[in-house]
Length: 292
Image (cartoon, rainbow, N blue to C red):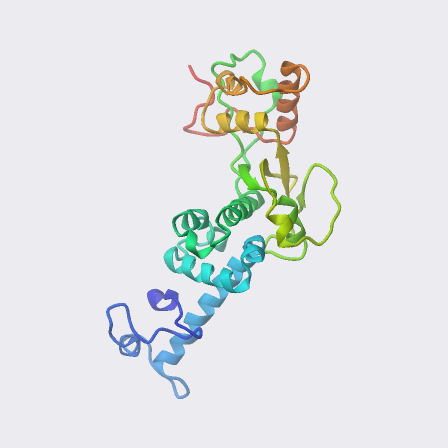
């Protein structure tokens, strides 16, 4: 029954007339669904098959307004159907529907051609938004917890809802505009640190190519996109990959840091800690944050 309901639709949003083994679908369905005085077994099941696909398509469309705007409705629909057929829903919650979309685009770029890099950037950003909206928030680190500890032994862990992104296109402002009145998670705030004017933007502005770094995170139940300097991104990425605090700071070697480097880095950490980006040293069982 589940296999029949979840099978991709045929052309015209109809249920497929052939079963997976080549038999007529109606022959297979007759074995486990009865007709009634108004509908055949095939027609009864087709209702559920269509409603299932209409529902997951709707959720996919709501979660990816930016990608839909880049590709256009028709190309996005083809991408959605191909992706959902290749990676059907396997979770109890529809929030995980797009969890493998970036992997799919990387392996099947023809579905987003000729906008592969732009589509990848947008898919990464929109998935990061979903993660920031409702992923776990562990007890945050308190600055006093680090007093007296050796930086060579401290491994700071970032919050599960925080995603670090290196993007090749400046797309954050465009997505913020789109999500004002669109998207499954439109109730979340989409904000940058700096003020910006709200205006209608076209695809040409989205395609402005410039490497930029973002931290997508949740703060007081709202989602924010925070611009990062290259040094900040490199430092946080090293921590996220398991480096100790002192080794993470080594990643800054050769980078130009404004002002006094020591004071600047201290301000970075103070700001990140105030935002609750670091987990407390005891909040992650099985992942020691202080090396012996």
